[in-house]
Image 1: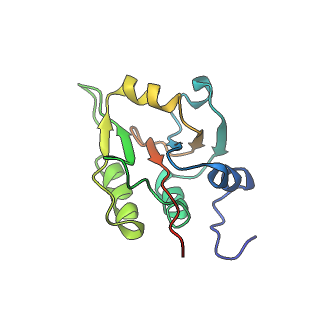
Image 2: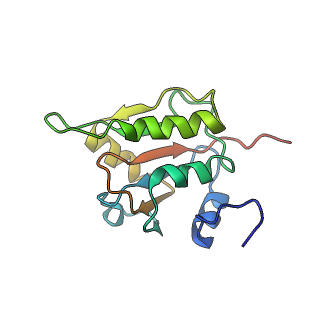
Image 3: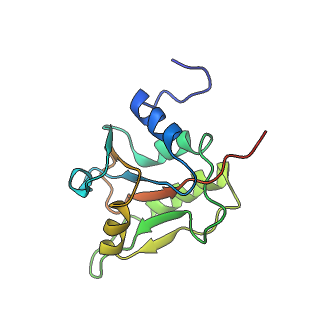
Length: 144
């Protein structure tokens, strides 16, 4: 264990976040997401919901302030429905850590999948809520 680091991090996930550079994207994917078939590295976080993992990541991870939308989610497919608490939960976490972050942008399902194919990594969680996938774009860590 490390002091000040969430116990939700596996060594692999912590190393992945550390290796990412400015502009790299990471996908926090729900349990339904086809992460293995995208051709990018996959980190397992089985059993964890996305929101607590997001809450663990954001104190260590600056979101990109040079883009219009550093946080992206999949738009609901017409005729389908999504749990509205998913985005609300994510926004609450984002506002706690980085309140100046612009609104979460929604992308068409296939545009979202294409974007994920260029991600630095996909983190497969155990979140079973539909449309719980989120892409984070890493920013520049401020000098302290």
